[in-house]
Image 1 (tube, one colour):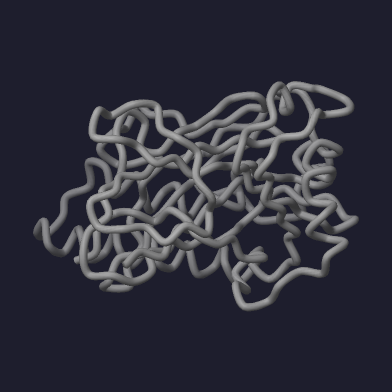
Image 2 (image 1 turned 45 degrees about the horizontal axis):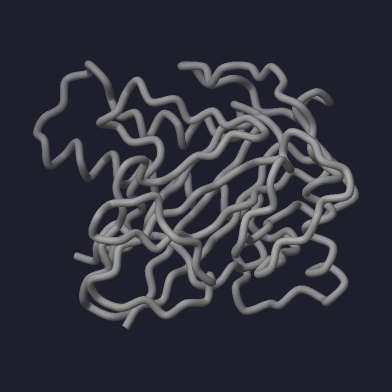
Length: 264
C-alpha cells in the first residue's frame, strides 16, 4: 500500500487538475488571498448531531476564502525543513511535510488517497481525539506536526484532499466519519474499519462534487515580494508558497482543493 504522503507537486483548480486557469486568475490569487483576509473570529462548533442544511449565515460566508501552503523537504535530522518547488519530482528516501495557513478562521481537514482508493485522514486523525483542527489567520499548521512522510515505492502519484470550512454543517459528515463510531458496539474490528472507510469516502465525494468544481486561481511564489498592506495573514511572505483562493465574486463558507505529489 502506498505510504501516507498525500503532499503535492502540482496544484489543481478545485478538482479539475487538467484545467489551467487563465493568466489573469493566476496572477491575482495572491492578491485575492490578502484581500479576503480578516482577523480571527468566532465559529460555531461542529455539532455531534446533524443540523439542517441551509445557506450559510452571512457571518460564516467569506469573500475570497483561501489557503496558502508550502512543501518542506525534511532531512534525516528531522529539522524544520527547507521549502522546495511544488513541482519537484521526489525520490525514494526523501522525507516531506507540508505547512498551511488560512486567510480566515475555519476548520481544516487533510486526507490522503491510498492505492485501494480509500481516503485516510491525516489531519485531524482519530488517534488524536484531543487534536483541534481549527485554524486561524496567521497560524501555521504542519502535517505531520513533528515528523515527515517518507517517499517510498512504487513510483507514481499520491493525492491529498484539503478542506477549509467555516460552516460546520458543510463538514458535519466528514467530521463524524473521521471521529468514528465512538462507544457504539461493533461486530468486529474489520467491519468497523470498512464502515469507517466507506463513510469517509462518501463524505469526500460529496464535498468534491459540491465544492470542487469552482475555479480556484493559484499562484506559486518563488521569490518573496513585499506585501503592500500587512495583516494577520501576511506577516511574512514564505518562499515557494502556493495560494489557493476562491476567486468567485460571491462569498462562500467552504473551500475544497486537491493536490498531488509525483515521485519516481
